Length: 155
Image 1 (cartoon, rainbow, N blue to C red):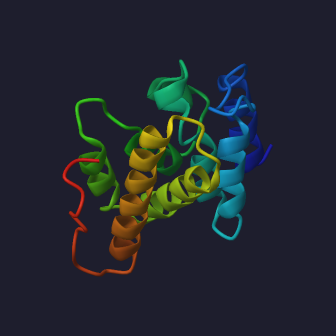
Image 2: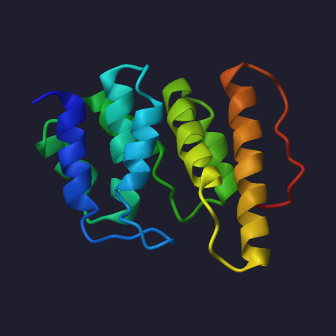
């Protein structure tokens, strides 16, 4: 089994029964993220499929090691896992140090940004601002441009 197929199988099992805010199977989100990474290598695609498993499922880093995923994939999944002790901006800034993590996070945010937002309009506005800030910040990091886009006090 190739790496992407293996990551898909693990992500499908890990996210089994989960639904997104619109009531659709959650697995569609990591599949869309990985699909947008199809022109990158299979480690990046596998990490795209697995990017939410540590945060949103019972899987652990140890589980991923036991499943014999490459260390590079596991490291990317760890970087992409939000630690509740950090603000969202600090989390995104930390991603900004690793090019491959930036690429996956941009794909993740773009997928979230393109989906209809179901929360109340005020909540939706905050999410939209967070997504826009993330895209600007990460794109600048990816292309080596300075500036933090700290125009949001704390997203």
